[in-house]
Length: 85
Image 1 (cartoon, rainbow, N blue to C red):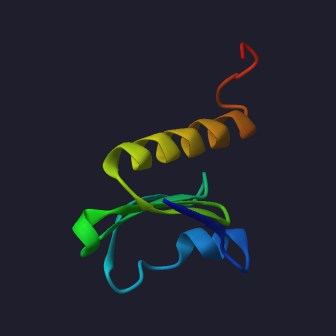
Image 2: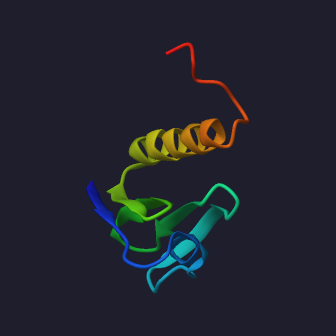
Image 3: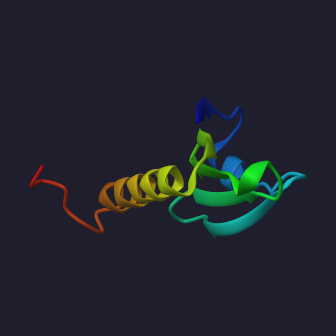
């Protein structure tokens, strides 16, 4: 698993089309989340949340990162409460 930050603006990071060798599985521009899967390299995944990128993920790692990004975005948008933690 690799973790890095994209350069540029956050909306552009999420709105960019999938690069060669990837297929876009899921995107939510309002929450700034994108999930892509490699068409090579044993189908590894990449999760982008804003400028934050988690790449070369297994299926289980992608589930964790996608869920973490979604819950964080929903909490930041006051769509759920994380005050119990």
